[in-house]
Figure (tube, rainbow, N blue to C red):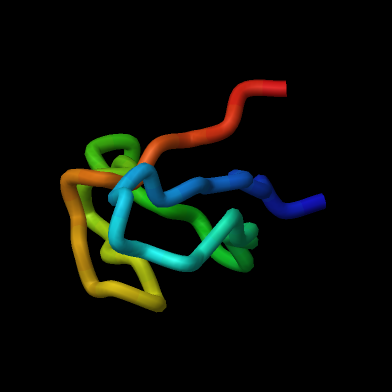
Length: 52
């Protein structure tokens, strides 16, 4: 099963609650949450992984 990350955007101006990222291929170990942007507001620094 591919890895899944649940992500939230903590920007107070953003209306996005959370989204899931599903990896369907091998991602390099150097890739992290900072390499992605919020699909709603476009910010990078405000993304955080939701730890379950």
